[in-house]
Image 1: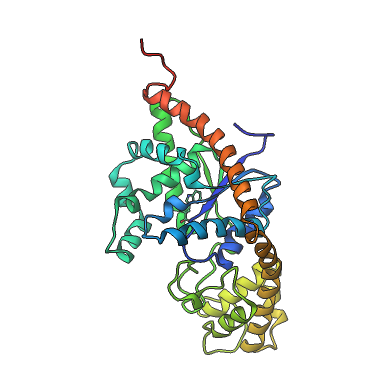
Image 2: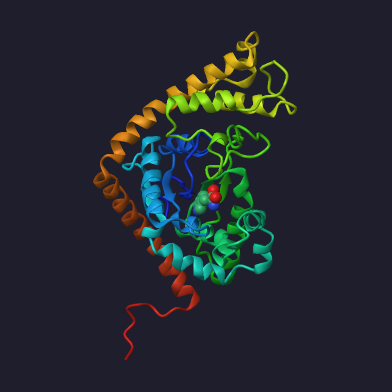
Length: 338
Ligand code: TRP
């Protein structure tokens, strides 16, 4: 199902919290660079979001806002398919079928489920448990070859590959077995106040992250507050997680290797380095925020893009689903029962 011989690339982000510079560096920035080389699908995975309680109007607004932020970060709807997961019901349908090809033993091993079950202990619902199967459906529906993900999603991709192989072994080759693509640089942008933890867009304390839509004064304040160690050297190493993280952000946004930055800032103190980093972030976000403001002011346009995206995605998803239904023995819709 490759188009123009390009490999199919697919990724998604759940609309919870606020997209951060971690998402930008680890995902959005790379996605826009990959568009020319791959046949891309980018999804706002709202069905994943409801594994945790969401306020309905916030979820709706945020799904559209995330799509606008994808576009503002450089996703080109002429080149790539961008859509909202719940607009393509095939995801739910394939997820159900794949649930029947997933062992509970496999799901019990998912570390993200264990973490989330602890974090949301008052609402450990079945959706949270089968979350990775819905992700497998997202990927397998479109015969994706390459799936850019963060390090924390490695286990989910491995599960996807196992489910796909199991299905193919039983019914013949229906699914492409996808490969994970984990970018080295920026795969792990850490929290600003707690650099042992990954920067999390749903962090309750917004001082832990820089949001893509943060105003310049907010960026400056958050970077100023970011934890550093008691030393004074601008150097990356394992005992200086805070400064190492800030250097990583600087390096990913500027394209300058960390070793060069250490040299460039060798006579600078933490405060001076932070000021320059804040400026770099502000300048990086400025054009994205400007594009975002224009887009979000024109909801009709965004909804049109999303409608077209959902239509293109549905067409492809249906092709896979038709094959799946047939192979497992479901009665075709247009069979004349006489
Ligand atoms: N589970 C992913 C995350 O938490 C989001 C996701 C859902 C996804 N479906 C996907 C990522 C398909 C890549 C491909 O980051």
